[in-house]
Every structure is written in C-alpha cells, then in structure tokens.
Image (cartoon, rainbow, N blue to C red; front, side, top):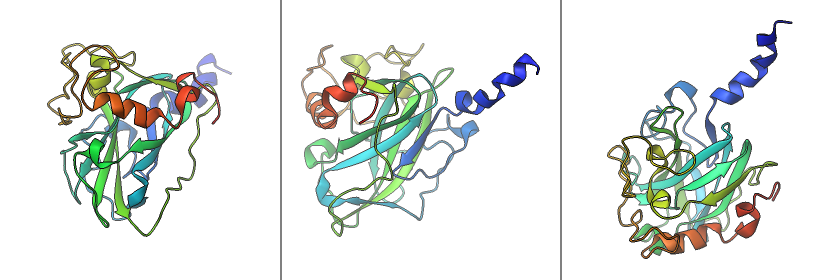
Length: 242
C-alpha cells in the first residue's frame, strides 16, 4: 500500500473542525464553516429544539475534530435574529482532545441574559471556535423555550476520553473565539480589549473585563461559576468520562 493511503481514513476527522450535536444544528457544511454567522446556514430551522423555560440553563453538546480549540457560546433572541448574537453566555474557554464535549448547564437566567424569557420565545444559539488560518468557525442551533417541559434531555451529554476544558482568564476570557487562537492569545490583527469582533456583535455588557484576573468584575465572573459549577473540577481537570 502506498504510504499516503494509510492516512486517508484520518482526513475527514482532521478537516471537519467541529459539529454542534445538541441542540440540533441548522446544518453542517465543512467548507462554509468560516462563514459568519452560522456556517453558511442563514435561514432559521423550522424544526426548533424545545428547551425547558424554567430550567434556567441549557446543555450544549459538540464534537471536536481539532486537538486544541478556543470556544465561545452566544445567543440571539427572536425568530430570525440574523447576525445579532448579542448575549455572551460563557467566558471563552480552551478545550483539548478529540471527540464529544458537553457543558450540561450553560446559564439562561435573567441576570445572564439581561432580560426575562417567556413561554414560546424563539432564539438561536451560536457556537464559535477559532479557525485554522484566522477568523472563526460557526454553527447555530434554533431553539424555542417552553413551560410544557421541565428538563432538557439531549441525546448525549458527556466528555470523550481525553477531552477537557478550562475557561480562559482575563482578556482571553472576554475575547470571542473568532478573534482568538486555540491557546487564548489574540489572532494577528485582532482586538486585545476583550470586545467582540466587528463581525460578531457580542454584548460588551457581558463580554467586558476590568482586569486581567479570572475574578474580574461585572458579569463574567458569575458566568464562569454558574456555567462550570455542574462539571466542576472534573472537566477542568480533564476527566475522561462524565
């Protein structure tokens, strides 16, 4: 066998970037993933994932196909928000390892969102990771909040063997992943202030920091505590399987 052929089974994994598995993604096109805001899928899905209104949290399950990744989670309210992803749900985190990674309880309380949700409200979740050669990779999931269910039940929510993550601190935590390298450093030419890029209008109210400490003032610090409380030291320490 030609030596090159032995690597062919690895090519799809190496090139596939990441997938948003739950809530259900609008779609996946590897070539269009660098296209803001939703990886080439600009039309909201007619089949929205129902999220428990009173749970005040949402699990997000993704699969990494890069061994080191910066990840941001954002939200836009409305039936067709376009590019207005103006709510940052979590400090940007640094993940390592290949395979499934799930945060079971990303906060959706009124303090995090800056507003109260209502029964039947539509929204779109955006997951952003750093791109291979600058910029970002994007995937979106359309959701609807409902009081008719009391808990969220993703098809899977666990960490693959060897997959772990740690929230970045300081400006790296407030810099959206499309401006970040996988290690948290700013991409060449990207802003170092922690504000979102001009192509990703993340709220400066939830994406600002007054110091380089991970205990910065404002909303970033409680977000970190709330979002990582369920996984705790297990994920931060890189526990293989939840």
